[in-house]
Length: 171
Image 1: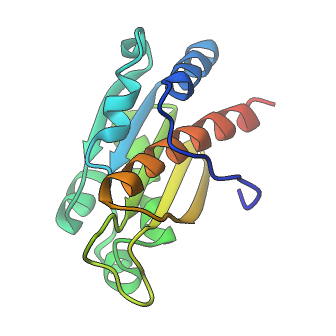
Image 2: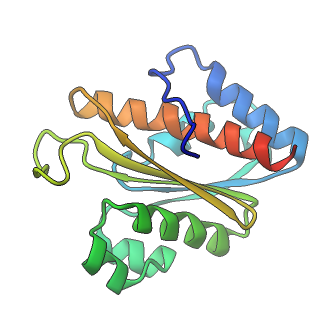
């Protein structure tokens, strides 16, 4: 999804309402696999009335061990590329989809800060993966701001990617 246009923080609740409506329309269920957002995506989805018709479960896999145990992210992938990588986001999305039997999975891994960043992987680096059935898309983001801002931007962009990927899949 190299042409995905990042979005700003979603304060009005419309984006999650649109995502839930789109999932309902397509009779899809969604699962989440969250690292740097720690459950914020799941919480944002369930803010919408009727979310129980599309959201069954989510995974907060903050540690590498949890990513491996709950989602099946390979230890070799974590060692070779690090937790914050395109490869891990892809394996998280695929793993969440497989474990939950959902139609759509959204996975996020990143460095929210203020610590933890390096020159190669700075604070604000986030990978978002979305799987719709067998098709997986991953995008890389470099967000600016404090820890909460990075997390909120991650949620908004994860939801926007879900909306775009589900729409594209059903064209």
